[in-house]
Image (cartoon, rainbow, N blue to C red; front, side, top):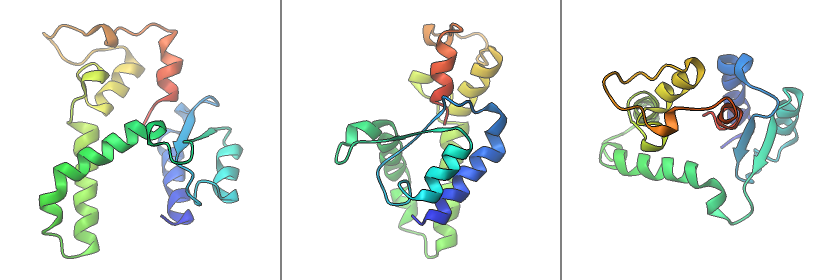
Length: 152
């Protein structure tokens, strides 16, 4: 990764969700040079976002993200072999990330996709009609700040 790419990604997050981010929102990463750069740290500090970094050499600190990338690699490896250009790879990755966020349900997210769960969290409406609402979907007001800090 290049620092400019990482900064552009954070700016995209801020453009899309800036008014929903709180000062207790954590931006978690590993200890790569782009995340320890002054420009990255200044951007987070200026927006009053908290930076969190995994410990050196400890994959468990990043377990959720490592799991995401592991599943993505498994799900696209056959298609990836057929890509012959950077644009094809980018398109495949964009398609997979969109699928993950929009359509891939997660048992730990009340049987919803990440985006469905986020909308459920904001509105309180559980979107699956005729389905028993899992206990984890019945969030108290005390749980909302914790989930807010974990938004992806």
